[in-house]
Length: 596
Image 1: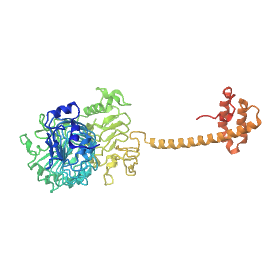
Image 2: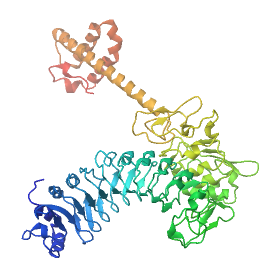
Image 3: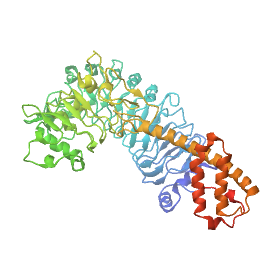
Image 4: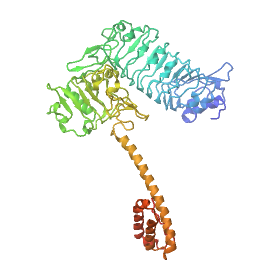
């Protein structure tokens, strides 16, 4: 990148017909006008150094260019609500003087850049199409000690929330909503004592809510956690948040009740007009659902679930059936039952009792007690509705092609045996399942461990979970990320495949070394035979002479080499005898060695 003037750098934005048309409708934006007089451009007090570019909502269409990095004194850059596309140039992110940057509501792609300015106050990248992970150390106090506002919401980001974000103790607004984030809320977020707005909604975040968020020193005003996979309960300590205005937890997997002290606080006032008590403004209670037609689901006007249905979590907008036959039919459809292997057609036979379906066992009262469908090509995520089978004690879905996360709903039935090993299930075992006694012997010795349910990612055991006599072992393979692995390198495969592969490689290496050694020895002896034959034979090029050389080699070899090379020499003689005509014109028979 060759830097010339600020005007040259900015004019790279408007190259092409579309850009020129935009520029022609704005003041300046040509080489005949001082750049400090251009539309959207501000300069320092001298009137010569560009310090700000503000083209928000100006119908600009184009890409951010590398040449923008030449604006080395740039402090503020705002191109919000335009039609930007392409990736974010690292040269722009590297500007050391940058204070505020806002390119939200565009179509910028690629990974989130790492910024070089320690003076950054605001980074607003929301409502774009950024992909990949949030940089582990890209947003930390070491790089941005003064950052106040970080907005990465409404993108396509994946992975977990970097704990390093919690080191930026001046942070007041953190927006990570509407991405594909997984993992849990870092407990270190409690260090963000100046944080006022925390938006984490509409992701796939799991785990329990860290108590460190709910201290009396917290300044939290808005806490949006809805539409995630958080489990456990809403802590009583949430009522410590004296400045709290909004809290949304609907659409999660939280059980229990709303703390009464929180219900008495003046929160979610935007929903005061809805019918219901103060707790309903936060989330509908367990076994109820929100009335249809509301802007915000899972709270406000709530009604009890109809008969034979339930809603086991706070803030539900629907109630799920508890009719076991319907649950099994939905399970079959959800997990691509038409592709299952080894089942009879009884799953599709409406006249047959579900207790007679392949893999289903019922107790004496006709309630489904066991589901055993291992190695039957089930695919997709585990159907959450299985958790509504109120008498289910055994669930074996091992060695299939299941993906996704382990549903929190499996904490609901009285399971004593759960096997999800040999699949490609990610994430972590929900803590509420880890705390269930008797699942695979969990808690029998007085302690509870998630490993008894399934070995965590990066570990394995022959059964896919720990036992009282066998712990999960660590993997060295960084790609081993699935729950319930029976080996490290190939989840869902034969548990002995790694050993077989290692053995095959060792055996193959030994065999190749053996053949190479044999070939060298055979070659040396063949040359000795050629020299001997050259002294005694009258027709070195004949087929007979060639065979005699082979016999001579055997005579000259030591006894310990005779058995080793016998097969090689015989094979060479056989190949020579079948091609004697082709070799009869060759003067040096010893060159006729086999090619491998």
